[in-house]
Length: 236
Image (tube, rainbow, N blue to C red; front, side, top):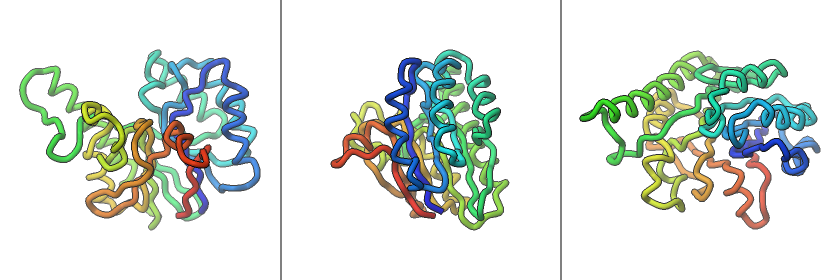
């Protein structure tokens, strides 16, 4: 299956033409399925999602998505999920989806740091609550992966699961860019590939400790390549 993937479209109400231009490259049959790895909207407003959906439907492609932190900004994340699902877009939040022998597991993920720098639930209640949120997101992903029966398992998250694809961002930001708890889950279930966004100035590719390829498909990063890319194309 040829998969096109992109994240961080950050669609605003006046972005109809910009989004159309970004998606035009997919109209020629370059991919069989599109992955959207979060931050679909700029401020998480339903009117922004309406603009994005109007352009996504022009592609006539199956689409699998997760939300990102920007999509939570206005507290309308449940409405955004409903809008996506109503038009047939697979909006995953701890759920699984299988198509043509490929399984997809999706969750937003969360921050918390990587490896030895990962925050633990010790000390103040606020810290424990923060870590609890990170653990809940990894459990959502674990639940989704456990539902898949396909040999090929593609993981879709917004936050980075490994430090390698965050390289290029300021080191001070690393604890807020993702969490290795996400990659640990993927390793346990022997995922085939992982796609994420969020790290706009990160690195295109990395691997988990178990060797799973990780693709950072944040649009600002793809656009910074020479030549600029509108999406990442991967065959699984």
